[in-house]
Structure formats: structure tokens, C-alpha cells
Image 1 (cartoon, rainbow, N blue to C red):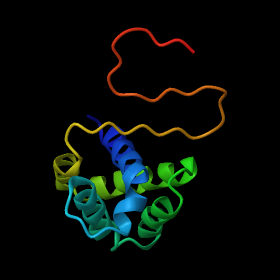
Image 2: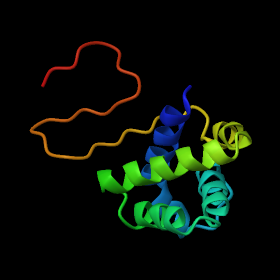
Image 3: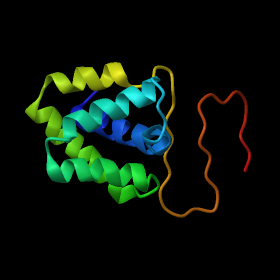
Image 4: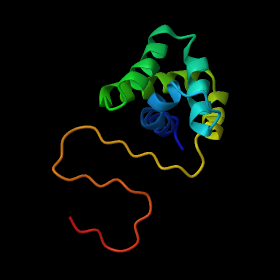
Length: 117
């Protein structure tokens, strides 16, 4: 997986789960991912703001893109970060994110059979 792809996956995962885990005190995989990203980006002012923006406005595609760019920069600076992010991603979870407008949108994990819209 390329750093760009990993950065976008992590940013989308945080957008999907970040708002709820930011206020939770649990110790699940999503919480661990947010803690890891927050700890890493805390040292980078504007990049830390990108994380908080996604937590506050998880449906904002521009915010998710900005967080992905911040994560990519952090991975360039710290090559070991990619492995830590992969390990912290919730195993087996699917993260779907839709931003924009559409008449019909389907987001799913496993589909067996036909889908008719």
C-alpha cells in the first residue's frame, strides 16, 4: 500500500469514527488510531489542526484530504509511522466515506447477489 493510499484510508477511518472516539474514553482500535495520529501530529501545528477539523466536521471532504496530506508528510518524516498506522487500523473494518451530492449512493462491505436501485 502506498503512503498516499494509507494516508487516505487513515483519514477516512478517523472521519468515520473520529468524532465518536474523540469524546469516548474507550480503548478500542479506533480510539488507538486517533490517539496515535493526535500524538504524532501534535508536534506539527497546522497538521494538528487538520486532525481536529476532521473530528469536528467528519463529512467535509476538504478536511479529510487535508488530514491525508498531513499524514503523508508525517510518514515522509517518520518512515516507521506507516507501520504503526497499519497496525492501529481497526482490523476487518470497512470505512466508507461519501462527500458530495448524488441521487443514489450505496456503501457496503459484503454484497451477495444483485443490487437494484
